[in-house]
Image (cartoon, rainbow, N blue to C red; front, top):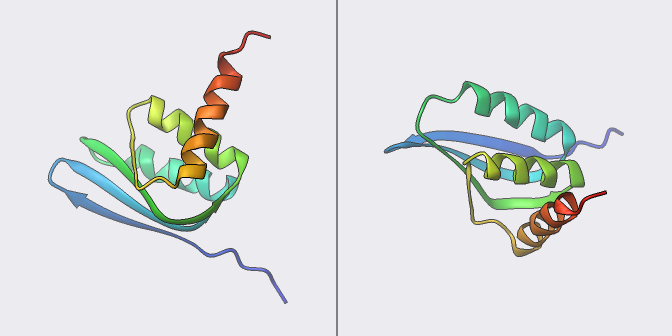
Length: 96
């Protein structure tokens, strides 16, 4: 029996924004696929709606932190993901 991880991306264009509604588990592989979609998105704002995301891994959190810093808007971000993004940013700002 194969273990399928459910993940969906629904893209829509609203007013001046490309909106990507994410649902399911956001892991490394899915983050890479999402990066490809973001790179082909038309001009305007990019919004990632995380309302239906159920689980993320560290690579996905690092990806979200990077795209948010680059100007992508994260909406409906679960509190634990928001806290993890903040922790990732803090750990990167500490000189080694």
